[in-house]
Length: 235
Image 1: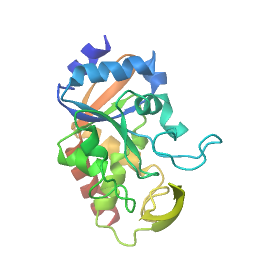
Image 2 (image 1 turned 45 degrees about the vertical axis):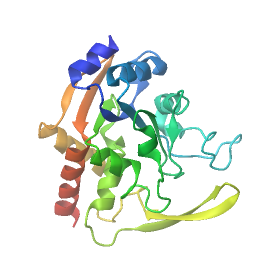
Image 3 (image 1 turned 180 degrees about the horizontal axis):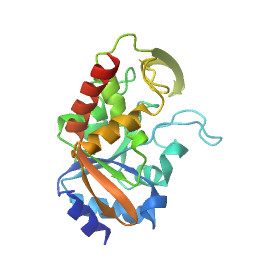
Image 4 (image 1 turned 30 degrees about the vertical axis):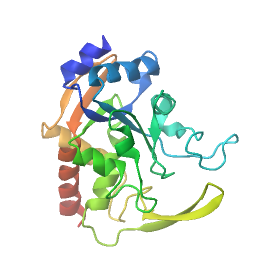
């Protein structure tokens, strides 16, 4: 059973966990995987996913309730977004969705500027000693590393400004350029390199969940390792 796999991996009742999932790897229906995670977490636990934002024909501007998860994040993220009681944070490009006891706290007052930095759902995940769970997801796609990019003391970070239509108004948002590495020296595939080094250090719990190889790790531990690695290699 999925619940047995998750418990054996080290997911505990009351945990706050950010999940990246490839349903192609796990197998079955995304709804069953979400329910299994929530069953293990119990009433005091919380599940969070990154949903981001992309315009659609039906919802061309950011709408907190209606904008779907970006397609790149897969069906799992969209299923969580539509889950009963799900709460979404209000930064379009850094938007998170959470379900559970601390969902409102995680998603409240998400800063529009620098949406991966302090006061954001990612910062609160680390603050609360949360975990990151990868269910067959590529190591390159760990969103928490954008928080590490923000925190790392690196010279000449690239800053971009993006305009969104929010509640009928044009809003300009400033953030570090996370689309192609926050500094020019960051090579393609760098997140994957950082993650492979973290895994090689033995900082993760690995095991099967459904058909996927799953990895469970400390959000604070990963952030600390990534910041130190970025500052040493790119600073």
